[in-house]
Length: 530
Image (tube, rainbow, N blue to C red; front, side, top):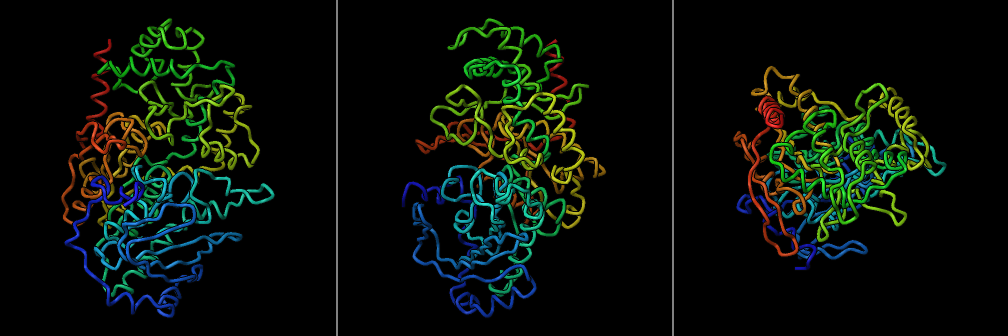
């Protein structure tokens, strides 16, 4: 087994008991025929068959990627899906010969509908090989968007926006994939599906939440991790540090943010309180940073002005919050030995901050300007764009939070969101949870179907360089028990993992989030600071 694919057999990513797998070695060869599949696709005029292939002996390969060498025998049905006037995406259905009776819809990441199974093996996401290894029939539809953290696909060759393609990404492709896949799986295995599931992180988490709110009968069990909901505000949160540094004309070395982070993490009371420089407890803390020594010299008053403005997040001139900032308790730089995907306090050779590509390009979507340069954006222009977006593009904010129909259909939704998330501000998730709660008679009733867990200081789809988070295996085991046995998880196990040495750094657990308990905890912390 090679160093990439070994993780598909690791306890962090295996959760299904092989005793429930049933062999379909006689049924699938008879059912996976072109004429049979084409007939099944008759109800889906936008989808056409491309090929059917049996992969045997545990191997699978794609150009320029390490060969998968530990995958059970499976059929791959490759189809084409018309997603927009000028776009046809690839839709693939994977059918394991030894099936656990369940379906797994594969979500994407960023603004893409698919995660790259090759590079995501030690990130906290479910890719199609991982689902297959656990015995699921699964599907992925790429919407012709690619697999990299890039959304330039929203523009055509002339630099014009293709809103029908963006609409397909936002609402349509995943739903059609799900309905078609479930229909085909039931027919080709000649038995009903036990339960259908989807897990997604970040942009994939946004897809999960959209499914629960807009298509409540698509899935029985859903898990959204660090979901990129409140999408418009999220873009402005991600780009804010760059706008601040460029407008202030002052670069603060990362070491000064690191020094502040170390100090606040050593304070067990203050670190519980969401950052707001207007609060006296935070004003005292920031004042205490003045002249604090760091490897790049003492923190100056000018440093502090920029740091505080960055931590606060963007406000309009009349004091209305545009988005939550990433306060001093959020690590926005990876450890020296950690994965480099996340952590946006990184510098270009000229000292400027590296831009989060998804946020920059999303802003190019919404301004309609493929050449928009965030480094040249003034505070005034930033506010004007924000105000304009809220009026014209609220459809793409992904703030739907009515899960009452999903609950009525018997569905179960788990939301996990670490308070150390350096991509999606956790405070926005708490606000979202509150809006969802408003649709239910009580939190107790909502928690029969929808639960949120907020691991302290856990990052964004990572288990290594942030606080302990919920692993794929632990989360999926809990979701399966809740969905199929009615055993609701009051708490979930958490783990921080050393992937280099294949051992845990730290383990723990996180309780189910309760809004009143959280608010009281923050209130008590504020009192203790006075």
